[in-house]
Amino acid sequence: MSSALFEKHRSRFERAQQVCRVRDCWSPFPDMPAKYPDAAAAQPRGAAAFGAQLGRAFELDQPGRIGQLGQECSPYTQQPLGIAYPQADIDVLFHAARHAMRGWAAASPQHRVGVLMEALDVLYREHLFEIQQAVMHTAGQSANMAYAGSGVNALDRGIEALVYAAQALQAVTPHARWERRFGAAQIVLEKSYRATPRGVAVCFACATFPTWNAWPSMLASLATGNAVIVKPHPGSVLPMAITVRALRRVLDAAGFDPNLVTLAVDSVEAPLGKRLVQHPATAIVDFTGSAAFGQWVERNAHPALVFTETSGCNTVVLESTDDLDAALRALATTMCMFSAQMCTSPQNVYVPRGGVATPGGQVPFDEVSERLAEAIDAVGNEPKKAAMILAAIQSPSTLALIDQMRSAAGRSGRVLLEPQPYVHPDFANARTSTPLLVQTSTRHGELYREERFGPMGFVIECEDADDALTQATNDVQRHGGLTAFLYSRDECFISQAEAAYAQAGAQLTINLSGPMPLNFAAAYSDYHVTGLNPAGNASLTDLAFVAGRFRITQSRRPAAPTAQEPTA
Image (cartoon, rainbow, N blue to C red):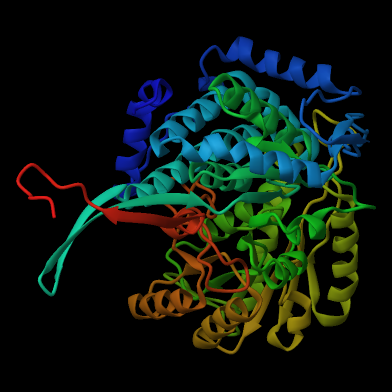
């Protein structure tokens, strides 16, 4: 039976289904804060809600409470948020989650989708600007990115996950009548099929983009009948705590057990991750975070089903271009975006030793490197522009890594651009840094052949264009890469690169310049991660991301005779 909540959101959901089929540009949400309905009142209301939470216990009525934890510190003020979250006994959370699944799994897929569409709508209408503030002051994103990337685009990714969950579930017919003759007898069976959820999912939310990956992961599990325990990063709890509380309230109002969604907080000193992954009741793990722990999860989560997105060294091949300055500006802006604290940020720029071909002639390798450094410096030199693009550094450990790589670069390359803090125009104490840019060669792969998280980039001298492509795609295959970028005027070389990057499993962007960030990932259109290299084993969002979260069970019995059939 169709639920009232599904009918409420039917039009939006069916539009999302259509857009996912054609991969078109669409969102039900405004892309800029100023376009939000009643933005003049909504934005200060969200800021007030965030401010009222500072220095207080976070109210979350869930079972198993054994204490409280909280160690978040704003990258903008470098002051503790002072929020204490309920610490829970994870055995109690798992028990409550499994109990909560009974009624939820029995509900129709359409009913579940309706409830979850309502949850997304509540996050949008009631909590969007509160979450924006929470993301800014935990992850360090700018106000616009926190609204767009961690707000409305994350909501879109959530709807997208529901679309694919519904598609997977609709492929399972609930009933069938089966007939076959065995000798002289005609056997007629009634068969019933159930999409049966796997069990309790554990969703890890990362520090810098907590909602963008977590919301679709949570909704994919919930839509297929599972419960979810959310494990936020200790430095970025608030966005996910708000999410969990909102979902629990929607579930409860819809007549379901709110313990379908719970929060498991931990600390850096006493992490819970391994216990959650290896808990006997864990059936699904969604992990976004470091490559080291992601690889541990992939090796040790069995028999749980695992979806990972970790990290990689995203690559750029500069072979030739119609407009070198435009290409370098686009690269510079994208390399600066959120101080490269994004899994899609370009890091390694591979350039032929002979330089880059342009309509005005060949531009030498050293000049290409220096012009890229100038384009990056133009972003960091203007505090207002830097605040919008670079934003703040989430963790002090990122600054330590920049210093470490700066020292290493002196031994294995040439520093093209020195990193330095910039003064944020709105937050004088913000933790900031302009990018480090290093020129090196393929002889020093230890410098760049892994993700250097934060504002760091490398311009790598290669033998020629073919070597640049080979080096880049081999590095992706061995060390992981989510996105890749190519500039070339040669259609044969472009075709060669498309095939090579497809084999390496990185999503490729070709000859893009202009105002759109090169690494912008559009919900309903762009697949995020391929699962074909060490940067992750799953994709947002395709059928494979949801279909394994349930299995099909069946029962069968002799069919009751119809009016035309004689009884035996």
